Image 1 (tube, rainbow, N blue to C red):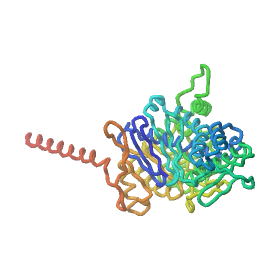
Image 2 (image 1 turned 90 degrees about the horizontal axis):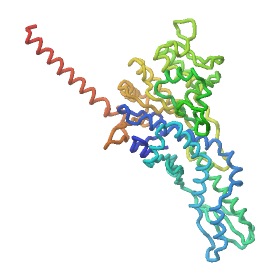
Image 3 (image 1 turned 135 degrees about the vertical axis):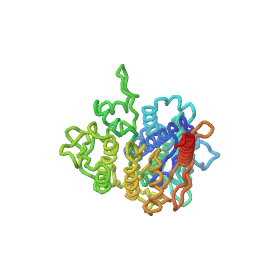
Image 4 (image 1 turned 90 degrees about the vertical axis):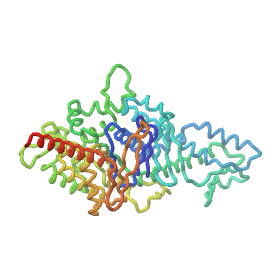
Length: 474
């Protein structure tokens, strides 16, 4: 499953392989790494929500008017020169129309809530493509607010018949929907709606067989969580719906990924998800030197140090603890590791044998961590991605980069399931390119230049100092 972004703000082009267990984006500051991550998160979040709720849309399929399809069917029925017509393209157009009504409007609202310059961004005609598999791609045209669907499917034909014995017939190579001269057009429309719903269900199954939940942990996790605690979850929830609020009420500008992050941490259920208990405990033992809990009365995460008797709120702990505690809380209480079985009658996924994963987006996991703890965290993350969860991270740390190389050499991180990506400027725009990787690790195309520059500068300074000392006779 691959996602591609074109013409999104400073980003000309970027592409990521979501089938990989770990994606790490490296690159300079202010280049678009966070922009891309937030866009991908929101796109996946909205389309996953649609897929999970596909069943609730079925009744509306038969109550909504579809004048274009009705006219198409009517024209064909009255045309004595045609006995059959391929309506495959019309079916796909119907699917796209349903997605626009039921999903794209919600996605547009999410993007508008998140990107302050959204109206300027869309003037660049941005596109987001999600290739679910070789036979299914969803292309979102942001400015036009429409979805284009590329789908390998059996052709669908309207066919005239002199008998009303069969309403339709499914063959190996095509589906025929029959029109009998005395049949009502409404019965044919219902059969077309059945096919559209079936195909959208198929799209949903294909998607949810690969990923079922997405989570976003922003940069400055500690400051965001502590700051938002001061005014609570109400405004966070309101900010997600500011587009629908009329009047003079001013809602703080809180991006939707940040609102989601805060709401997840404020609505924790304390029944631990045992699948990640060992990973969370390893972070607590090796890095935090204490336990992360959730106070159900205060609705806030707490830190119980091994050295202090009283638990502390995030405002009272060190920057390292306040940055890592939210990650630990997500693993303990939030990330869904028991995927619900999603199925639609007669629909099967092409991802047979594979299990759906959750994707956790983490910006700068190394923030406020001593290099020793950065190394420890990457060792833990290398084990985490073997537990059916995917990590999508942005990092500026050479310690993160080098330790993940070591995990490849140690056989703990499969180089075929790790995608290191470099985001860089090209002709004044940002784009991505995959970094070379093999069983020995990743070629350093990011940190080596500045490292060499520092070493060279040190040599020049030492030589200059030695020269001065020599001139003084020291």
